[in-house]
Image 1 (tube, one colour):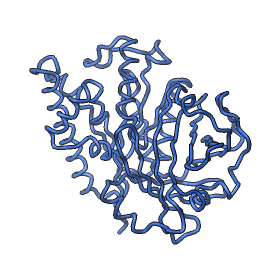
Image 2 (cartoon, helix red, strand yellow):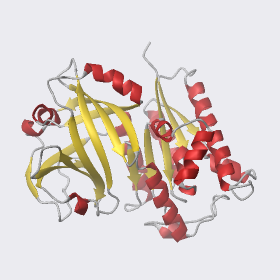
Image 3 (cartoon, one colour):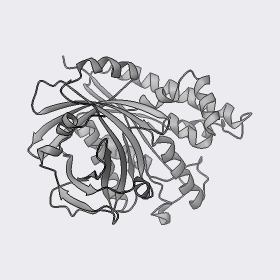
Image 4 (cartoon, one colour):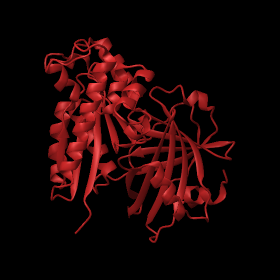
Length: 368
Protein backbone atom coordinates (compact mmCIF):
# COMPACT_ATOMS: atom_id res chain seq x y z
CA UNK A 1 0.00 0.00 0.00
CA UNK A 2 1.36 3.41 -0.98
CA UNK A 3 2.21 5.87 1.77
CA UNK A 4 -0.43 8.53 2.37
CA UNK A 5 0.60 12.08 1.45
CA UNK A 6 -0.98 14.87 3.50
CA UNK A 7 -0.12 18.50 2.79
CA UNK A 8 -1.42 21.47 4.78
CA UNK A 9 -1.39 24.90 3.13
CA UNK A 10 -2.70 28.34 4.03
CA UNK A 11 -4.64 30.67 1.77
CA UNK A 12 -4.44 34.13 3.26
CA UNK A 13 -4.56 37.77 2.20
CA UNK A 14 -6.27 41.05 2.92
CA UNK A 15 -10.01 41.72 2.98
CA UNK A 16 -11.89 40.94 -0.27
CA UNK A 17 -8.94 39.07 -1.77
CA UNK A 18 -10.98 36.25 -3.32
CA UNK A 19 -10.36 33.54 -0.76
CA UNK A 20 -13.91 32.17 -0.87
CA UNK A 21 -13.85 31.82 -4.66
CA UNK A 22 -10.33 30.42 -4.48
CA UNK A 23 -11.58 27.55 -2.32
CA UNK A 24 -13.96 26.52 -5.10
CA UNK A 25 -11.18 26.68 -7.70
CA UNK A 26 -8.89 24.61 -5.47
CA UNK A 27 -11.60 22.00 -4.91
CA UNK A 28 -12.28 21.63 -8.63
CA UNK A 29 -8.65 21.66 -9.78
CA UNK A 30 -7.14 19.35 -7.21
CA UNK A 31 -10.15 17.08 -7.04
CA UNK A 32 -9.46 16.34 -10.72
CA UNK A 33 -5.82 15.64 -9.84
CA UNK A 34 -6.87 12.93 -7.42
CA UNK A 35 -6.71 14.86 -4.14
CA UNK A 36 -9.16 14.67 -1.28
CA UNK A 37 -9.44 18.38 -0.45
CA UNK A 38 -10.36 19.42 3.09
CA UNK A 39 -11.11 23.03 4.05
CA UNK A 40 -10.66 24.55 7.51
CA UNK A 41 -12.97 27.60 7.74
CA UNK A 42 -11.69 30.99 8.85
CA UNK A 43 -11.70 31.00 12.65
CA UNK A 44 -12.02 34.77 13.14
CA UNK A 45 -15.22 34.94 11.07
CA UNK A 46 -16.71 32.04 13.05
CA UNK A 47 -15.96 33.68 16.38
CA UNK A 48 -16.91 37.25 15.48
CA UNK A 49 -20.16 36.16 13.80
CA UNK A 50 -20.96 34.23 16.99
CA UNK A 51 -20.39 37.20 19.27
CA UNK A 52 -16.81 36.50 20.38
CA UNK A 53 -14.64 39.41 19.23
CA UNK A 54 -11.75 41.61 20.35
CA UNK A 55 -14.26 44.25 21.42
CA UNK A 56 -16.46 41.81 23.39
CA UNK A 57 -13.66 40.08 25.28
CA UNK A 58 -11.78 41.66 28.17
CA UNK A 59 -8.80 42.56 25.95
CA UNK A 60 -7.65 41.89 22.40
CA UNK A 61 -4.94 39.60 23.80
CA UNK A 62 -7.54 37.50 25.65
CA UNK A 63 -9.53 37.21 22.43
CA UNK A 64 -6.43 36.17 20.47
CA UNK A 65 -5.72 33.41 22.99
CA UNK A 66 -9.17 31.99 22.25
CA UNK A 67 -8.83 32.33 18.49
CA UNK A 68 -5.40 30.66 18.36
CA UNK A 69 -6.60 27.86 20.64
CA UNK A 70 -9.57 27.15 18.38
CA UNK A 71 -7.45 27.39 15.22
CA UNK A 72 -4.90 24.91 16.59
CA UNK A 73 -7.59 22.50 17.71
CA UNK A 74 -9.38 22.62 14.36
CA UNK A 75 -6.13 21.91 12.50
CA UNK A 76 -5.34 19.00 14.83
CA UNK A 77 -8.78 17.48 14.30
CA UNK A 78 -8.66 17.86 10.52
CA UNK A 79 -5.26 16.16 10.44
CA UNK A 80 -6.54 13.40 12.72
CA UNK A 81 -9.51 12.84 10.43
CA UNK A 82 -7.38 12.96 7.28
CA UNK A 83 -5.20 10.11 8.55
CA UNK A 84 -8.26 7.85 8.73
CA UNK A 85 -9.35 8.52 5.13
CA UNK A 86 -8.69 5.99 2.35
CA UNK A 87 -7.39 8.53 -0.18
CA UNK A 88 -3.62 8.53 -0.79
CA UNK A 89 -3.32 12.27 -1.52
CA UNK A 90 -4.98 14.72 0.87
CA UNK A 91 -4.75 18.50 0.72
CA UNK A 92 -5.77 20.43 3.84
CA UNK A 93 -6.47 24.07 3.01
CA UNK A 94 -6.61 26.57 5.88
CA UNK A 95 -8.62 29.73 5.35
CA UNK A 96 -5.98 31.75 7.23
CA UNK A 97 -3.56 30.32 9.76
CA UNK A 98 -1.93 31.12 13.09
CA UNK A 99 0.39 33.85 11.77
CA UNK A 100 -2.57 35.88 10.47
CA UNK A 101 -3.27 36.71 14.10
CA UNK A 102 0.10 38.41 14.40
CA UNK A 103 -1.17 41.28 12.22
CA UNK A 104 -3.50 42.33 15.05
CA UNK A 105 -0.96 42.22 17.87
CA UNK A 106 2.45 43.43 18.90
CA UNK A 107 5.31 40.94 18.65
CA UNK A 108 5.33 40.61 22.43
CA UNK A 109 1.59 39.90 22.57
CA UNK A 110 1.93 37.31 19.82
CA UNK A 111 4.69 35.49 21.70
CA UNK A 112 2.56 35.48 24.88
CA UNK A 113 -0.49 34.16 23.00
CA UNK A 114 1.57 31.34 21.48
CA UNK A 115 3.15 30.52 24.85
CA UNK A 116 -0.31 30.39 26.43
CA UNK A 117 -1.26 27.79 23.83
CA UNK A 118 1.96 25.82 24.29
CA UNK A 119 3.58 26.43 20.92
CA UNK A 120 6.62 28.34 19.70
CA UNK A 121 6.53 30.67 16.69
CA UNK A 122 9.04 28.56 14.73
CA UNK A 123 6.93 25.45 15.36
CA UNK A 124 3.73 27.18 14.29
CA UNK A 125 5.36 28.42 11.08
CA UNK A 126 6.84 25.03 10.19
CA UNK A 127 3.46 23.34 10.70
CA UNK A 128 2.27 24.71 7.33
CA UNK A 129 3.80 23.29 4.15
CA UNK A 130 3.11 26.40 2.03
CA UNK A 131 1.41 29.78 2.19
CA UNK A 132 -0.46 31.48 -0.68
CA UNK A 133 -1.21 35.17 -0.16
CA UNK A 134 -4.02 36.65 -2.25
CA UNK A 135 -3.67 40.42 -2.48
CA UNK A 136 -6.79 42.39 -1.49
CA UNK A 137 -8.88 43.76 -4.33
CA UNK A 138 -8.39 47.15 -2.70
CA UNK A 139 -4.83 47.05 -4.04
CA UNK A 140 -5.02 46.92 -7.83
CA UNK A 141 -8.76 46.40 -8.32
CA UNK A 142 -10.49 48.83 -5.89
CA UNK A 143 -13.67 48.91 -7.99
CA UNK A 144 -14.32 45.32 -6.83
CA UNK A 145 -13.60 45.93 -3.14
CA UNK A 146 -16.69 45.43 -0.97
CA UNK A 147 -17.60 44.76 2.65
CA UNK A 148 -21.07 43.52 1.75
CA UNK A 149 -20.34 39.79 1.61
CA UNK A 150 -18.67 39.39 5.01
CA UNK A 151 -20.27 40.63 8.23
CA UNK A 152 -16.88 40.57 9.98
CA UNK A 153 -15.28 42.88 7.35
CA UNK A 154 -15.25 46.60 8.09
CA UNK A 155 -12.03 48.03 6.61
CA UNK A 156 -11.91 50.96 4.19
CA UNK A 157 -9.85 50.65 0.97
CA UNK A 158 -6.79 52.22 2.58
CA UNK A 159 -7.18 50.15 5.73
CA UNK A 160 -7.56 46.99 3.64
CA UNK A 161 -4.30 47.68 1.78
CA UNK A 162 -2.46 48.38 5.04
CA UNK A 163 -3.82 45.19 6.60
CA UNK A 164 -2.96 43.17 3.48
CA UNK A 165 0.66 44.34 3.72
CA UNK A 166 0.83 43.53 7.43
CA UNK A 167 -0.52 40.04 6.81
CA UNK A 168 2.06 39.37 4.12
CA UNK A 169 4.91 40.53 6.35
CA UNK A 170 3.63 38.29 9.16
CA UNK A 171 4.06 35.26 6.89
CA UNK A 172 7.11 36.31 4.88
CA UNK A 173 9.48 34.23 7.04
CA UNK A 174 7.84 31.06 5.67
CA UNK A 175 10.20 29.29 3.24
CA UNK A 176 7.45 28.72 0.67
CA UNK A 177 5.21 31.76 0.35
CA UNK A 178 3.66 32.93 -2.92
CA UNK A 179 1.99 36.30 -3.42
CA UNK A 180 -0.85 36.42 -5.98
CA UNK A 181 -1.74 39.95 -7.09
CA UNK A 182 -4.51 41.56 -9.16
CA UNK A 183 -2.61 42.82 -12.20
CA UNK A 184 -4.11 40.42 -14.75
CA UNK A 185 -7.75 40.23 -13.69
CA UNK A 186 -9.54 37.92 -11.29
CA UNK A 187 -9.71 34.82 -13.51
CA UNK A 188 -5.97 34.94 -14.18
CA UNK A 189 -5.43 35.48 -10.45
CA UNK A 190 -7.21 32.20 -9.73
CA UNK A 191 -5.38 30.37 -12.52
CA UNK A 192 -2.03 31.61 -11.21
CA UNK A 193 -2.95 30.42 -7.70
CA UNK A 194 -3.77 26.92 -8.98
CA UNK A 195 -0.58 26.88 -11.08
CA UNK A 196 1.61 27.78 -8.08
CA UNK A 197 -0.11 25.31 -5.77
CA UNK A 198 0.25 22.52 -8.34
CA UNK A 199 3.94 23.29 -8.78
CA UNK A 200 4.45 23.16 -5.02
CA UNK A 201 2.68 19.81 -4.80
CA UNK A 202 4.84 18.38 -7.59
CA UNK A 203 2.07 17.72 -10.06
CA UNK A 204 3.21 16.89 -13.59
CA UNK A 205 1.38 19.56 -15.62
CA UNK A 206 2.99 22.87 -14.60
CA UNK A 207 6.71 22.50 -15.23
CA UNK A 208 9.12 24.71 -13.35
CA UNK A 209 11.35 26.24 -16.04
CA UNK A 210 14.06 28.61 -14.85
CA UNK A 211 16.55 30.62 -16.87
CA UNK A 212 19.80 31.34 -15.09
CA UNK A 213 22.15 34.26 -15.68
CA UNK A 214 25.33 35.81 -14.35
CA UNK A 215 25.21 39.52 -13.60
CA UNK A 216 27.71 42.13 -12.45
CA UNK A 217 27.89 42.55 -8.71
CA UNK A 218 25.25 45.00 -7.50
CA UNK A 219 24.99 46.54 -4.07
CA UNK A 220 22.49 44.38 -2.14
CA UNK A 221 21.14 47.52 -0.49
CA UNK A 222 19.89 48.59 -3.94
CA UNK A 223 18.27 45.21 -4.54
CA UNK A 224 16.60 45.51 -1.13
CA UNK A 225 14.79 48.66 -2.34
CA UNK A 226 12.87 46.79 -5.07
CA UNK A 227 9.14 46.77 -4.14
CA UNK A 228 8.02 43.52 -2.52
CA UNK A 229 11.54 42.12 -2.14
CA UNK A 230 12.17 39.41 0.44
CA UNK A 231 15.59 38.48 1.81
CA UNK A 232 16.50 35.03 3.09
CA UNK A 233 19.77 33.39 4.05
CA UNK A 234 20.17 29.82 2.87
CA UNK A 235 22.59 27.09 3.86
CA UNK A 236 22.18 24.31 1.31
CA UNK A 237 23.58 20.83 1.84
CA UNK A 238 23.50 17.98 -0.66
CA UNK A 239 22.68 14.42 0.30
CA UNK A 240 23.60 11.21 -1.48
CA UNK A 241 21.18 10.19 -4.26
CA UNK A 242 20.99 6.84 -6.01
CA UNK A 243 19.60 8.29 -9.27
CA UNK A 244 21.43 10.65 -11.70
CA UNK A 245 18.08 12.32 -12.49
CA UNK A 246 17.28 12.95 -8.84
CA UNK A 247 18.87 15.54 -6.55
CA UNK A 248 18.28 15.68 -2.80
CA UNK A 249 19.00 18.85 -0.88
CA UNK A 250 18.58 20.12 2.65
CA UNK A 251 18.07 23.79 3.32
CA UNK A 252 18.34 25.72 6.53
CA UNK A 253 16.65 29.05 5.83
CA UNK A 254 16.85 32.16 7.99
CA UNK A 255 14.22 34.82 7.37
CA UNK A 256 14.25 37.58 9.95
CA UNK A 257 14.58 35.89 13.31
CA UNK A 258 13.02 32.61 12.20
CA UNK A 259 14.76 29.43 11.04
CA UNK A 260 13.07 26.90 8.77
CA UNK A 261 14.23 23.55 7.44
CA UNK A 262 13.30 21.94 4.12
CA UNK A 263 14.09 18.72 2.31
CA UNK A 264 13.89 19.09 -1.49
CA UNK A 265 13.85 16.30 -4.06
CA UNK A 266 14.38 17.62 -7.60
CA UNK A 267 13.39 15.15 -10.32
CA UNK A 268 14.18 15.65 -14.01
CA UNK A 269 11.19 14.88 -16.26
CA UNK A 270 12.47 16.41 -19.51
CA UNK A 271 15.74 17.94 -20.66
CA UNK A 272 14.81 21.45 -19.48
CA UNK A 273 12.00 20.69 -17.05
CA UNK A 274 11.98 19.55 -13.44
CA UNK A 275 9.52 18.82 -10.71
CA UNK A 276 10.56 19.80 -7.21
CA UNK A 277 8.91 18.26 -4.17
CA UNK A 278 9.46 20.12 -0.93
CA UNK A 279 8.88 18.88 2.59
CA UNK A 280 9.04 21.12 5.64
CA UNK A 281 10.94 19.36 8.42
CA UNK A 282 11.86 20.27 11.97
CA UNK A 283 15.30 20.90 13.42
CA UNK A 284 15.65 17.34 14.74
CA UNK A 285 14.86 15.82 11.33
CA UNK A 286 17.31 18.23 9.70
CA UNK A 287 20.12 17.17 12.01
CA UNK A 288 19.28 13.49 11.51
CA UNK A 289 19.34 13.80 7.70
CA UNK A 290 22.72 15.51 7.76
CA UNK A 291 24.28 12.11 8.39
CA UNK A 292 23.64 11.39 4.67
CA UNK A 293 25.55 14.47 3.50
CA UNK A 294 27.58 14.08 0.34
CA UNK A 295 31.05 14.86 1.64
CA UNK A 296 32.37 15.48 -1.88
CA UNK A 297 30.63 18.87 -1.83
CA UNK A 298 30.70 21.88 0.44
CA UNK A 299 27.55 23.27 1.99
CA UNK A 300 26.57 26.29 -0.10
CA UNK A 301 25.72 29.61 1.56
CA UNK A 302 23.54 32.12 -0.29
CA UNK A 303 21.96 35.44 0.56
CA UNK A 304 18.85 35.41 -1.64
CA UNK A 305 16.61 38.29 -2.65
CA UNK A 306 13.29 37.34 -4.29
CA UNK A 307 10.67 39.54 -5.92
CA UNK A 308 8.18 39.73 -8.77
CA UNK A 309 9.24 42.05 -11.56
CA UNK A 310 6.63 42.76 -14.22
CA UNK A 311 4.92 39.48 -13.50
CA UNK A 312 8.05 37.31 -13.44
CA UNK A 313 9.37 35.66 -10.31
CA UNK A 314 13.04 36.59 -9.89
CA UNK A 315 15.80 35.41 -7.57
CA UNK A 316 19.10 37.24 -7.02
CA UNK A 317 21.68 35.10 -5.22
CA UNK A 318 24.82 36.37 -3.52
CA UNK A 319 27.01 33.29 -3.20
CA UNK A 320 29.85 32.91 -0.70
CA UNK A 321 33.28 33.76 -2.16
CA UNK A 322 31.80 35.40 -5.28
CA UNK A 323 32.95 39.03 -4.81
CA UNK A 324 32.38 40.23 -8.39
CA UNK A 325 29.17 38.62 -9.64
CA UNK A 326 25.70 37.45 -8.67
CA UNK A 327 23.41 34.73 -9.97
CA UNK A 328 20.01 35.79 -11.32
CA UNK A 329 17.21 33.31 -11.96
CA UNK A 330 13.87 34.00 -13.62
CA UNK A 331 10.96 31.55 -13.55
CA UNK A 332 8.97 31.34 -16.79
CA UNK A 333 6.19 29.23 -18.30
CA UNK A 334 8.02 28.50 -21.56
CA UNK A 335 11.35 29.33 -23.18
CA UNK A 336 9.73 31.74 -25.66
CA UNK A 337 8.60 34.10 -22.91
CA UNK A 338 10.20 37.56 -22.93
CA UNK A 339 12.65 38.09 -20.07
CA UNK A 340 12.46 41.22 -17.92
CA UNK A 341 15.07 42.57 -15.48
CA UNK A 342 15.26 45.70 -13.31
CA UNK A 343 17.61 48.35 -14.76
CA UNK A 344 20.10 48.01 -11.91
CA UNK A 345 20.80 44.36 -12.85
CA UNK A 346 23.37 44.13 -15.66
CA UNK A 347 23.31 40.65 -17.17
CA UNK A 348 26.66 39.42 -18.51
CA UNK A 349 25.71 36.00 -19.86
CA UNK A 350 23.18 33.20 -19.66
CA UNK A 351 24.35 30.07 -17.87
CA UNK A 352 21.15 28.02 -17.80
CA UNK A 353 22.77 25.09 -19.59
CA UNK A 354 26.34 25.67 -18.45
CA UNK A 355 27.30 22.77 -16.16
CA UNK A 356 29.91 24.95 -14.47
CA UNK A 357 27.14 27.01 -12.87
CA UNK A 358 24.92 24.24 -11.61
CA UNK A 359 24.48 24.38 -7.85
CA UNK A 360 26.10 20.98 -7.45
CA UNK A 361 29.19 22.14 -9.36
CA UNK A 362 29.40 25.36 -7.35
CA UNK A 363 29.11 23.34 -4.16
CA UNK A 364 32.16 21.33 -5.20
CA UNK A 365 34.23 24.49 -5.56
CA UNK A 366 32.96 27.09 -3.10
CA UNK A 367 33.89 26.61 0.53
CA UNK A 368 31.88 28.60 3.05
